[in-house]
Image (cartoon, rainbow, N blue to C red):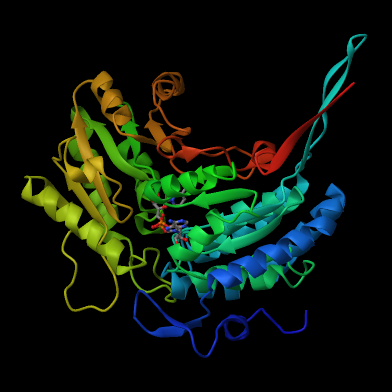
Length: 471
Ligand code: NAD
């Protein structure tokens, strides 16, 4: 490596520009630096370079590309603290807890896992009638468009399998977190051949230029359902392949046999990981009347006691919302719930004078199923807890919405939990935890939460073309 990229100052200096769009810390509003912005001409030029680079990258063996991914993981590991600091300042997420350092660590883990999966040719027929093999070949250029909540980790979810399968990648990060993704790509590019991985900071217009580009062969998108729908429409003209990881409104159903004290921390972090700004987080919790008050009180206590503050302070584990629009969505939903008669068990009243897009960790009880805080994705630190009398009713409520990313069941009885899990409509149902992703386990949504799968060998196959050779 030419320049030491293990310090925040050096890494930041490598990616910021003098004239560009100012990026601020959402906790303090301090200027972090200016980011470059891309034009649609830049998209054309990057895609042309990516097409050229794909020829030799796609011709490498799996072992050679795996070797590159391991080197990329080594580079990320070396720069992990600098990357975490960029996340802490730009996203606002604290260094500690399941936040910035955790995210930088996950980037390394996902790079290594994707390097190590075996992708074998599958012999489908081998008898006197003939011989048929299914193999997986590169698609070409992948356009990867991402959100702001886990900007580095989600970028790695997109780029690592794509590169492994012989594609080149053009990334379009969220306009809210351009520095995080540029920093990650800059680190990884210390070890990759030129133009195999490129990043184009810009807004939705640049996203549109990527998703509609005739020479991009596959779109990996993570973001809102609305944008996912727009991307699917724009992909249709060229019949581009798409993987869509979209919004969710994950339900958790607590059964009446749990030990509330033992489960409370796990329940809390299932909902409040990354200050609630997580796609597959617990966003509505159904609790039986018999233990309702105990669950509300236990979660309210943890919410009130968990330190929230700016990302760079070591003691915090909850941070601000990343942007003002998201803060307004959360505040509006909680106020509407209050007006409708719900109880704010804790939180709910943001301090007016503090800088930053903070919203306190909020537990809302006595809230009805049809309340907007239950029906809509809050994507922030406010959890509605809905009381139920019959389990069938809770299952019906859990399945009622148009989205189906994750869900969870909480019980001391594994068999009973599995029985309930089998009735929930979602890409993943966790038992006694929520949102725990693993690079070996496929992850994806159903209904309006998306299409396709990421992670594991299944995820690799989705960034490749299936090719049958038969004789
Ligand atoms: P968003 O849809 O507003 O933006 C996502 C990205 O799409 C950004 O980079 C944006 O610039 C780009 N974009 C906007 N309009 C576009 C267009 N017309 N064509 C192409 N690109 C366009 O989403 P967000 O607010 O950044 O992210 C929050 C949402 O993402 C939440 O709903 C959350 O649940 C979801 N999410 C899902 C997952 C998952 O894995 N399923 C993970 C994280 C976040």
